[in-house]
Image 1 (cartoon, rainbow, N blue to C red):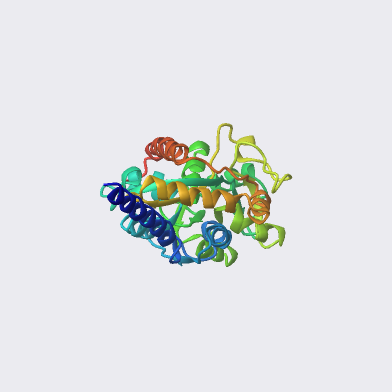
Image 2: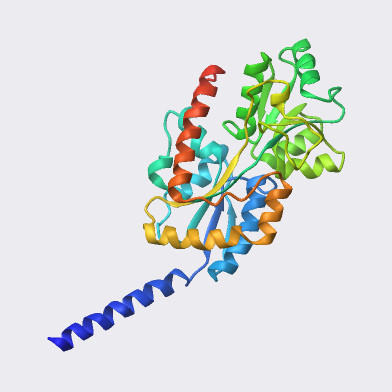
Length: 319
C-alpha cells in the first residue's frame, strides 16, 4: 500500500513538472488584429519583446487585420486555450462590435479571457497642414460651412477614431463624411497625402508626425490635456464633456484555464513594468495600468454600454 502511494506521488510530481515544462516548450503566438504601423501594432511588438524575456520563450507577432479587428480577434477566440495564443485587445472588436454587428462570430465576454490591461491612451485630432484650421473651434466653423464636404478617416468602422469622430459630430452638430481604412497606418498615409481632411488617431501613430511638422494636432481626446502634447488643448475645452481614448489589453482564448491565465499575467506584468515599456507608454501620454482579469472584464463591459449609447445618439446604422 505504501509503495503504491509512493508511486502515485512520484507520478503526480512528474506530471506537474511535465506540465510546467510544456508551458515553456514552444513559442507564444501573439495576434495583432490590425496591420503594421498603428498603435496596437507598435505596443504589441514592444510587449512581445519583453514578454519573450520574462516568459523565456519566443513570442511571434502575427498581424491578422480585417473587419475592424474582428478577424484577428475571432482567430484568437477560436484558438486552443493552452497558453500559447494571446491577442491584443482594443475597443473596436471587444466593446463596439457587439453593438455594430447583429451576428458576432464570437462573444467577447465568453470566448475571450482577459489577462491584463496595458494602458488607456489619449487620441489626437489631426489635420493635414493644408487645411485652414488650427483648433477645434475653427474646425467646427469650417465643417459647418461645408456640410457633407469635410471627411475624416479612421482605422475602420467601429474603431476608436471612428467613434470619437461620431461623438465629435454629434456633440458639435457637424455633418462630416467618415472614410474607413484597413488600419491606422493606411489612414495616416491617406491624411498625409491629402485624401482625407481630418483623423482622430492614437497617440502612438500620430505624435511623431506632429512633432515632425507633417501633421497638425488640433486637440487631444482625453478629458484633460496630455503630458505628451502639453500645449495642445483637449476637445473638452471647446466641447465640455467630450472624452474618448483607446484602451490596450491582452487576452487569451476563453477556454484557457485560470492557472495558465494567471501565469501569463504574471509574466506580462513583469514585462509591462520594464523601463522600456513604461517610458514608451508615458511618452505617448499614458501610464501602465496592469490589471487583474476581473478588472479588465469590468472595463470591457462598462465601455460596451458607453459606446452603445454613443452609437444610438449618433443614429449610426447597425450592420
